Amino acid sequence: MAHLQVLIRRQDDTLGVISGTLNTIASQAGLIGQEVAEHSEMLDDLSTRVDGTQSRLSKVTKTMQNFITKNEDTRSSWCIGILVVILIILLIAVILV
Image 1: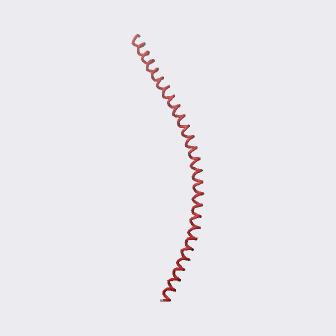
Image 2: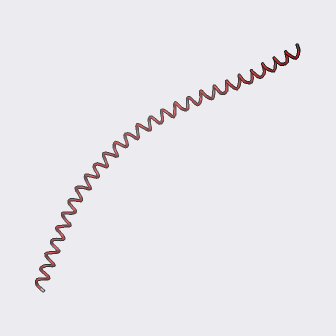
Image 3: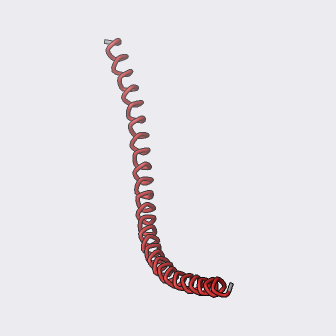
């Protein structure tokens, strides 16, 4: 009978240790859950900011494309005009020589 009481006491002690361990794990799980919730909020905020930045970047890219297109047309016209003037000067120089 004494041997049985010793076994029961050891089981009680072991169950006490297991209970403490489970309480610690439950506490850690709660903390991990809070961290996950905080990181989820931060990721949502970051996602919102990235979407806003992407929208602004798209607008700026479109504006730059329009600017480049307009300047290419203007530069091409000036380049052609200057080349025509140079060609006329060269033709006159060849005719006079």
